[in-house]
Length: 66
Image (cartoon, rainbow, N blue to C red):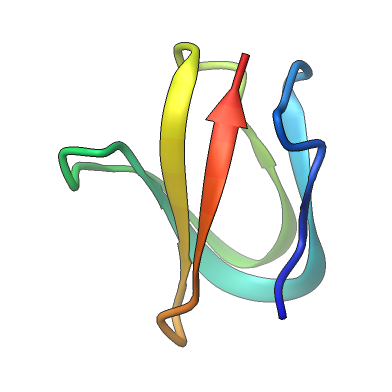
C-alpha cells in the first residue's frame, strides 16, 4: 500500500512511501504532473483542493492541498 505524507499537505513537497512512477490529477481527470521513479513531488503549484495520485500500477490515493 502506498502512503503519502503530509496529507493534507501544507508544504511544497509531498513524499511517498516507495519509489514509483506516478501522476497527479485534478478531479476533472486532467493530468497536472508526472514523476518517474520518484518518492517525492513538488506540489507548490497546486491550488488548495482535492487531487488524485495515480501510480503506474493503477493504485489511486487522494491528496488534499490546504
